Image 1: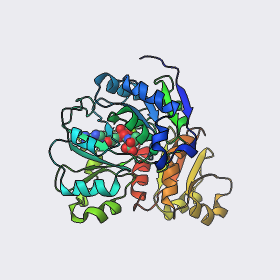
Image 2 (image 1 turned 180 degrees about the vertical axis):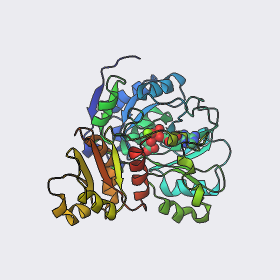
Image 3 (image 1 turned 180 degrees about the horizontal axis):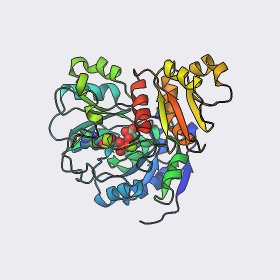
Image 4 (image 1 turned 120 degrees about the horizontal axis):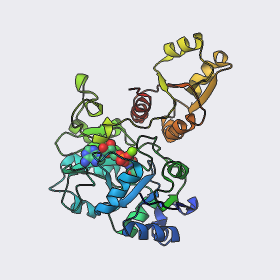
Amino acid sequence: MKEYKTEIIKIDESLISDKNIDSLKQHPALEKAAELLQKGELVAFPTETVYGLGADATRLEAIKKIYQAKGRPQDNPLIVHIADLQELDKLVKGDLNLPAEKLIKAFWPGPLTIVVDKKETIPAATTAGLDSVAIRMPAHPLTRAIIEKTGLPIAAPSANKSGAPSPTRAAHVYADLQGRLPLILDGGPARVGLESTVVDVRKERVRILRPGGVSREEIREVIGDYLYEAQGADEGLENSSTVERPLSPGMKYRHYSPQTPLYIIEDEDFLEGLLHSNLQENTALVLSDEWASKYQSSLKGIKVINMGPRKRPDLIAAGIFQLLRYLDTLSLDRAYIEAIPENGIGEAIMNRIRKASSRE
Ligand code: TXA
Ligand code: MG
């Protein structure tokens, strides 16, 4: 693999706003980013969800570089990012159905990715040979400026090493991928902190393949009965590692894994049990503000890491990947992390925590 001297360019956060997209396009850092992308090189940039590792989605050799730089399995397809609805026609085969149109209207630009039938414009390597393609229109002004400036659909997975927690800051990208790409744009911390929600809109009933920045409740509010609600044994089909071809291929891989063995505190009974046991010295508890203060007197002498307030799961989401990375700097023997309610953004948070903690 080619070795690069990776440059990080910080964009002044006061310049990053929706009404400033046109002048952002003139920024020297964006000139450079667009030039690299048009040459088939990789550029990492912030989006509102997590940092992405971008490349020209229509160009085979650029796509290969993404898989190489991340060490990503070849059968895990990429999301294609657009900045203009007109681009959709060039990528989608056939017509979008009603729920797809409603979802686009409600959540684009934003943290929602739709899986549709693909046209030939996108090479098979981008979609790992699938005849569908995942498409997202990001809301981040910098991402939009980059896409508009290149005039290209941009394929971008999260800009982490495959298997590591997704990057929510430029420093995370640098730590994982330094030397593997020429340029990282630093636009500050990602606002949402979790990846987009991936939905399959190819059938009349929409399936959530990966929970993310747009919650199930928000989707249900917009499309009602068009949302496929898994129940009982069906639940988690998409997450199963045993099915041959999961609907969203990425879901079968171990993800977001800190090196630190991580266990989930499912409820307060479990926490109380832990606190009454002899916790090994090199153990940390990751707790919400509420539980940390409720159990304060029993936590003396125990290392406690704060995950934020239970009543503000959006804040927990924004910090969770950073927290998983931080755990690994502490050389712990194990860590326990509090489970939060799985509604709203909590569903996506717990999806990532469970993946991070799955021991195989
Ligand atoms: O928020 C996000 O979605 C970020 C930012 C950079 O946009 N991107 C991201 O990409 O999370 P990645 O590659 O880390 O995750 C993409 C997910 C994977 O689970 C992948 O399997 C799924 O989307 N996916 C991509 N194309 C698909 C397709 N055609 N059918 C089903 N699932 C697909
Ligand atoms: Mg990823």
